[in-house]
Every structure is written in structure tokens, then in C-alpha cells.
Length: 253
Image 1 (tube, rainbow, N blue to C red):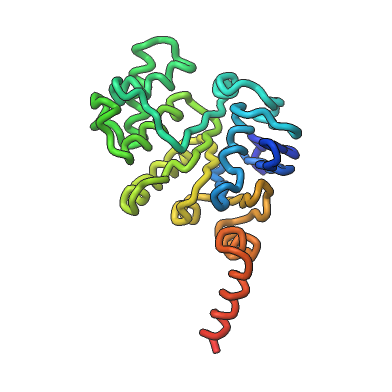
Image 2 (cartoon, helix red, strand yellow):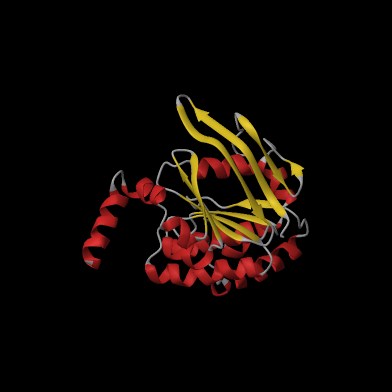
């Protein structure tokens, strides 16, 4: 059985009267590629913020690599090996792609030459090698998404939290990005991804957790959770599962 790299126990977070995360517990095995899905407003990004130290929980704990890191500052968590990406990509626009990636490398590599060399290696892994000397401001949306991924990867993480790294991409760009994410996982980095693109979830994730209204409502393989009636209701509304069953029965008759 794989070691549990990340353990969340009874996490809660409210903002005023809004219960954004309610009693969430889950474990992420080392070496896995897993996903957290759910409708908009489910609390997924808040949960990532609680894991990584950007937000303090009201209750519950976060353990990473056997160490209690609850409420620990994000830069300290990053030094331990937990790094996250953000939905809204904000590169250093005036710097080159190489220099942007080197910013991530400097977390653990103080030598400038070594950081730039690592940036080149990481760029090759995410498909940015031909654009290394281009200003980050000149990248397409897809290029910026790859750059965000590269900066996180340059910190040499054990666990990479990907927050909708495929959002805003067209179908071809998504298809091109899926093997990049798989390659990162195959290279030994544990990946937990928040994702709305179900094509990617079905292709990549070994295990999926489903969050709705701040609560975990289902977990299992992608095939299991996407056929779960609670998940269908959460995404498509009350009564949808019954209507789909009726339609299927009618078609079969």
C-alpha cells in the first residue's frame, strides 16, 4: 500500500455565514494522480488554500509527509515539497519564460546559473523549450498555463496541486496538455488536480473526490463517481438522475 503523502482530517472553514468547507477528510497516496471535482462554488479552491497554507482552517488538521502543517505558511510548505498553481495565471510579464521558471527554481536553488539550467530542463518537460527566450507577456493562454505549471514544477515538489490548469483551453490544447500532466506524474511527482474538464479527469485520475456545497459527497474511480446519482444531482440539479434513468429505460424499451 502506498504511503499517505497528504492527510486532511475534519477540515472546516466558514466565511461569515457561508460554510465553504465542512468536515472534509481525505488522503492522497504518494505517487498517485488524483482529482477533486465539483460544481462551481463547491469549495474546491478553498480546500486547496487550506491544504497549502494560504487560508487557516477553523477546525481540522493537515499533515504532509507525516508532519502536521496545519496553518503553516505557504512558503514553508513549498520548501517541504507541496506546491500549487493558481486558476488566474500571473507571470512576470516583462521577464522571459526562462526567467519566470527560474523564479520557482530559486526556492531550493540559490545559484543563478543552476536555477536557469533547471528552468531549461523544466521547460522541456512542459513543452516550452522553443519559447524560453520569449517575454512571458507574449505567450498565448495555453502558453501561460504551461508556464504556471513550469514555475510550480521548478520548485521540485513532491506534491503538485493543480488548480484548473486546463481552464480556458480549446479541445486541441487540452488534448496536448493531458500527456504533459501524465508525464509529470510518471516522473515521480504526486499530483492532485482540481478540474472541470471531465475528459482530462477520465483520462488522468486514478481516484476522484467530489465536493458539493463544501462537503465530500462521493469518491472512487472516475467511472464510479460520474455515474453516482449524488454527483449527477450536484452538477445538473435535483431530479436529473431520475429523468436520465427514465430516458434510458424508455430508449431500452
